[in-house]
Amino acid sequence: MNNKINTFKKFFDICLLMFLLFIGFSNNLLASEPQDEITEPVHATANEHGHSEGGPVDITKVAFEHILDAHSWHFWGEGHDAVSAPLPVILKGSNGIACFMSSEFHHDTQGIIVVEKNGDRFVNFEEKIYYANPTPNEYGQYVTLTAEEKEVSVVNETPLDFSITKNVTQMFISVALLFWLFTSIAKAYKTQGITSAPKGKQSFFEPLIVFVRDDIAKGNIGQSSDKYVPYLLTVFFMILVNNVFGLVPIGANLTGNIAFTLVLSVATLIITNINGNKNYWSHIFFPHAPKAIWPILIPIEIVGIVTKPFALMIRLFANITAGHIIVISLVGLIFVFKTIYIAPVSVAFALFIDVLECLVAILQAYIFTMLTALFIGSAVADHNGDGAHDSDDKAMEAAGH
Picture 1 (cartoon, rainbow, N blue to C red):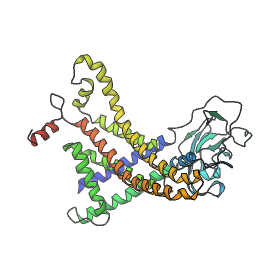
Picture 2: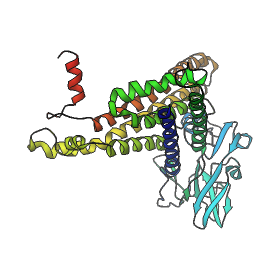
Picture 3: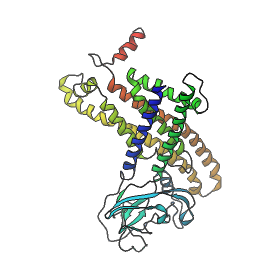
Picture 4: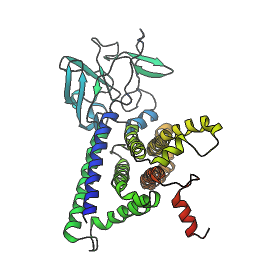
């Protein structure tokens, strides 16, 4: 029982560490760099929800508006009639820290509304905060825009952004939910004992916990898997819970955020290589191959240290993001063809993808956790003289080979 309680404590510590890392990465990973200014301003003709004035609906803009991060949590509606929850904006400007609520932008994401704090002037353009120009351009925007290959970019410099965005808020919600679930489960184990039949939440989550511990951790790492179980549980449930939240129409697409998957993959990279034994590093720098090809094998092995977690990052990000884009695109066909007769086909396919997304939500949590355990297992496994795993030899002997 004490081991289970300690496992839950480690689970929460890892959740907190990942949360802090995510805040740092999410707001600054894709920050725009200043570019050379051009004299002719460019005006974005579509409004913040992708509807061009007098033109067709921009499905691409609508899709990205739903999957990308934002400084407010939009529920429904457009423009000044939109219903959304304001979130804290925290900026490190040229004159110090500036804090205010995103509602001060009044739903503007076109760089028109200026917010002045601590002597700095800020505007929100497409959900990124920039320093405002002293005067507006001919379209009333306080940003200088450039057009390169039909893409609009911003010249203005950006402050350091530590805002509590929609994805960060989603992280708060998921951490609070997991904290409540697992503290109540741990309390139930403490009061009822581990021998009594599980009830309520225990009966649902205990099979998942046992599955991660026995099938994923022990199956891929071996006898030394117990100390890695808290991390694997953290990864599994953080991804699973946020995948489920992402299926809600007004939910946040946290696991489809490259910063979130980056934090998880970096954590896997660190844990794998810190715990790698001498056989693991010997296989990288002294491969079991003729020395003549070492100059080729060693760089490949070194690159492989990074490419493995990189593949984890891209796989989770791409699968979750692709599902949301497909659903929005299918529904958008109604507006593209401008006829109600396409609606039955469009909605039917969108419903099918939604059902498939429910499976993907569970499958991606399993795949990320399983591959993480596999990478850790390869780093801590014992090898024989030929470079093969002793555990593999034992398995072959047990099978009668």
